[in-house]
Image (tube, rainbow, N blue to C red; front, side):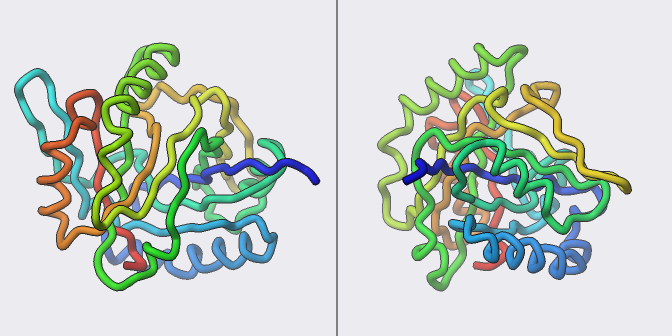
Length: 234
């Protein structure tokens, strides 16, 4: 039997899709993506996020806590966890997605963890927390993610926890950029962005304000940053 690996396909929010009206207009595209991946048999789980105009980023510099309201550039619009034999197969899935020109999909191998889809589908609000790290080079970024992992590995086993995944380093993944003629594949790293996602986890919370308070007191923001987005389907 062929060994299978989990990969996270992360679709970047285009600037024009940062508002609620624009996200509603994208509903047909999101449904088409989910249907397409489900038909391949590779889809494990997937979700769409509220627009970044409704999100928060939390980080700490020294003793100072910074909470920033969206919208944000080059941020996450939706995620799809897929299971394939290798990176080439996961990248091929990304290239075949029925997406709009100018869309971008990052394909990243999962290092560890699991998303509890059954808990995500229960009633109530669920928030996605993207673990962000900023570094001038990938070794430094990896060290930052390792420190965050060590400080937080036992912090998510709480009521309302819906699982999560830590991602491998950017150089282990691919970026698929769509244009009018074809899908172009680019190798990592992608550290030209201010902050790169190192993981994604999910918590059930009453509101964005509650999620922000929880994040502000967590070790995640002492070592990196968190972007908080409500799941669209919740």
